[in-house]
Length: 386
Image (cartoon, rainbow, N blue to C red; front, side):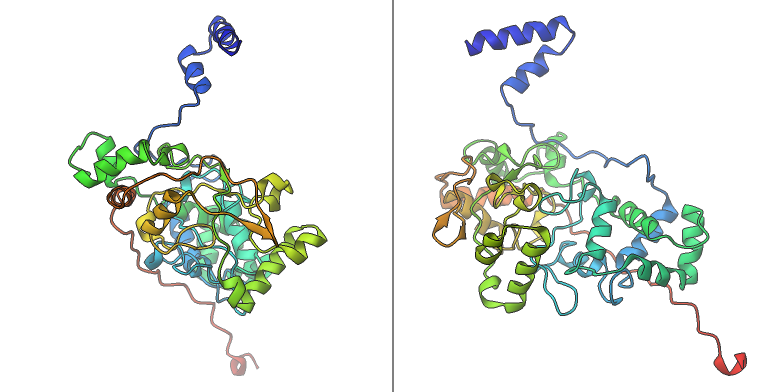
């Protein structure tokens, strides 16, 4: 019956001019193959320009875009730390600690959603959310905007780029996003190999690629040019260990549970990050997080939403063992772990081959000197004023 239905569907699509080849691929649920990375998409409402990128770079590194002028974008996205933060949980606003691992901004220009549960739909919205989030930047929009207005260099750049007499905070997020869209790496060994340079990968990496596409089945979720399907899965990643030993981390976790809204029972009993559940309030989404890209992963340890694994071999061994299991409340093991995760049966050599291939999604480390930040306007001489 299913075969007859499929043939009928294909016939109908052919009659109405729909590609039968594309339809057949969709029906077969073929994963997009690995591919070289092209140019990042640029939104029509925020076009790139050299001056906008220059302004965005300064603002990215400027801690004055935060609550107490100490916590800017770079505090959680350090160039020397893979443009992320090399601790399990990200750095938080002073006197707090964050509750999830900081993701790299390298190649973030290609993503359709941001943060681990894609709660922001654009780089512009991500910048605002991070700068104003209570345990991240903790900034107030009007205060940050006023600070910018007291800096002559910024006043001039905002006027030149956006045509406004004074800096507007919404334009600050647009400038930062424009800068982040330049943080792209698309000349990795994998890109070169897929473009025809068969010497770009070592023999070990080629063996790893075969495992990636075959026995290990990484391609099921890490597919396409960006190596992510941007879907959500529960892998059974263990909870953040710091929640049991770091009281400040536990306080942040409880605060986030309260702020994002859960039932009274879950607020009291939750022992692990609910993930996508925060957005959907569907129990089937407990512990689900978006598939991260593997690009630039060589430099972005630790891994997973809570930094559970400190190197790529740990990650591969986790998958090789069939993942883990979540206990969100006492004695209740989560039943929504994805069925895609199962023991792989990889040998130690195969694990090393796969790790070597994953590292080939990274080119040279992207380094950048921090820009000189413009000063505030000098205060008037009080004596002269009198």
